[in-house]
Image 1: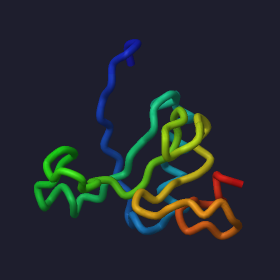
Image 2: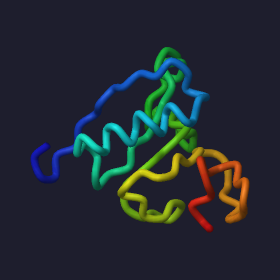
Image 3: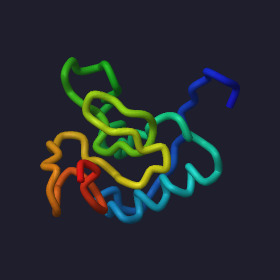
Image 4: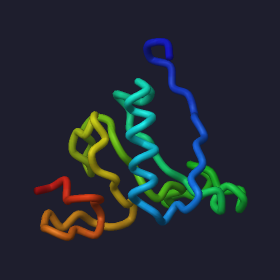
Length: 107
């Protein structure tokens, strides 16, 4: 991409609940040099089929996972996309954290 430009890339996986596969695809995108400085957000097609998009319902998150990118208020820096984070679950900072896959990013 050109410096400062942002583009949407659609990638499909067979099963969005398979976090191992979603993370593998995200890491493959990272290895291609795409989204190296930006988080990738994962939105299942069922949400799109309901005609729901970011900003269409105030306070409702349309994505279920994020991975990679710089630090935010809710996510530490993870440019190498080592951890897939569930959107609506709080990080416990402990082993077996339900938000972070494959391991808690807060440890």
